[in-house]
Amino acid sequence: MTAFWTESDYDAHERVELVHDRKSGLTAIIALHSTHLGPGAGGTRFWHYAEPKDAMRDALRLSRGMSYKNAMAGLPMGGGKAVVLLDKDRTKTAEMLHAFGDAVEALGGNYVTAEDVGASEADMVTIAQRTAHVCGLPAEDGDAGGDPGPFTAMGIYHGIKAAVQHKLGKDSVQGVHVALQGTGSVGGGVARLLAKDGAKLTLADIDPARAEQLAKELGANAVAADAIMGIACDVFSPNALGAILDDEGIARLDCAIVAGGANNQLARAHHGKVLAERGILYAPDYVINAGGIINVSLEYLCRQKGAPCDINEVRRRIAQIPGRLTEIWQESEDTGEPSDVVADRMAQALIGRG
Ligand code: NAD
Image (cartoon, rainbow, N blue to C red):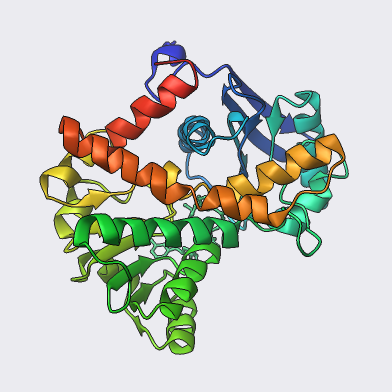
């Protein structure tokens, strides 16, 4: 048997739960990377994986990313993530969601779940019928909570503006060309915010109708999904799935900045260095995309205390993302290390693994 514990993705996870519920057909993995700063918080991804090992790799990499993300966002939360392995038709039933809620509840508050790709606010409501350790539940006006997507988009928008200021010396994104990959909850939100500021947008999605519809709404261009990484632009903003920054992907880029919301954008650890060597400023994904977890973590923490949670506190914390990015880029320039390496070192120190 291979020593799973020595594989790099495992990275000393505190706990990895394999969940199977025969009655509902639920198969899931709950990965808890670190509870050093608080309960492991991170969403649940509902996805069809070609191989179970792909699901495990996703869970472990995403969970570690949540440890780093929550620490760098200044939240009293550790890192965790769950993946639910769906069949080819992506069948998701209320029974499966209830069984998943039971599995979360059995962890006694060590793991707090929320939305991720393939999950909705309504799914969180169904899971919450079985456990209190869930966030991203519908929010009243003026309260934290609800779909994290728009808050993630808000943080990325601020982060792109900071990158444009840092790399291009511009105080505004007016006329700045941003190529967005993925026009879903996050990418669509980022595009709308940038459009309001007069940015020039090129959009792509594997669902071309989605990109075209948004392009029409915003007066932007839409291109085929396989063309977006080669578009000549100022900012490439990945807002679909991860691991797109590999040797081939980076070679195709024709931009000054990579700043977007997708998790685990770097295919391998050395790809941050490859970007830096090409002179491309990279916004570490888990720093720039923390807006959603800031929103739902504050919702969860307030609910645990029985206190209302002011949305302005969420906005105040999201507005700190550009400052953190600038600190990372500054240290990267001072030390000559790629920005992802600097961010990882800062995060590891915060979770007691420095
Ligand atoms: P979503 O499902 O709403 O949107 C993703 C979009 O990307 C879809 O429209 C999909 O068709 C498109 N897509 C998938 N593969 C593509 C490809 N190869 N090329 C072009 N488009 C492609 O998901 P989302 O909530 O917007 O999340 C997007 C990314 O951001 C994910 O990596 C997610 O993990 C990450 N993220 C999301 C949040 C959040 O709050 N929703 C928070 C942090 C990180």
